[in-house]
Length: 336
Image 1 (cartoon, rainbow, N blue to C red):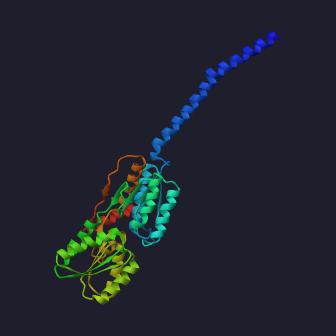
Image 2 (cartoon, rainbow, N blue to C red):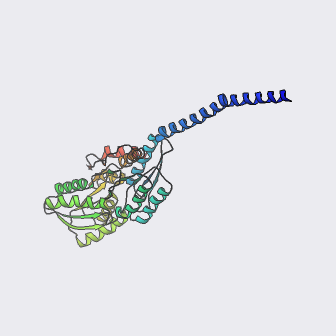
């Protein structure tokens, strides 16, 4: 019995030594390797699907916002991350847009890229994102919010001045001009209108009226019809986006009048109209770059890298002289 017990004890001791010396070591290495692999995947996939950027635009009802969407999606593809692009049916649907931002915060996206329709209404939601450590990049429209990572977009005031300079050169002193602008309270359209007004007044032109048409083509047409009844002798129209400009053009054509019309955005429909000799000009921004560079900035912020506080994507005047090259560039972006 004593001998048997001694043998059993020896076997037990040997087993424990094997487990400690081999099996335990293998288990620890395996756990360690698994942890290292997980860290490497997270690091390399700052480029991969571990990151999710939410992009919320003002609407998805125009080529302009579709170009922003195309830029955002191309950036996501290049960076190897997931992107969700959302927007309400119209730019005046502020509550719906805020709800979309809140939903993405609830889903704990890595970063937000937002074109706020009404910045003051969105700031409380931005603060909620900040509390959840979700960086927020603003695109297209800036907001008076110190915690934004960056503003990526057009110098709208400068673009408005370009529109004013173009009309002043074409029409000369004393000419009467009407301005159609986006929704009241939208700082983007404030800047675009104010930039033009500054130049037009300085050059001696008369701004006879400034009226909102909410960035919509149909509303641009009806507002223009009313303007023509009250001011049948106007010689120029500036609209702070192309949709309103194209709507105004319809009303002008129906009234059989010859009035210069300048839009803002450089959308495909506006460029085609310029090519056809209808719309006079458009102040073209680069919505594709706004979407692309907005997502790039958001990913940098999510990785805690430095991002410039302001990234200007530039503007240029498009007329019949340079419209063809611009159409080719946009066709490539939209795949048409």
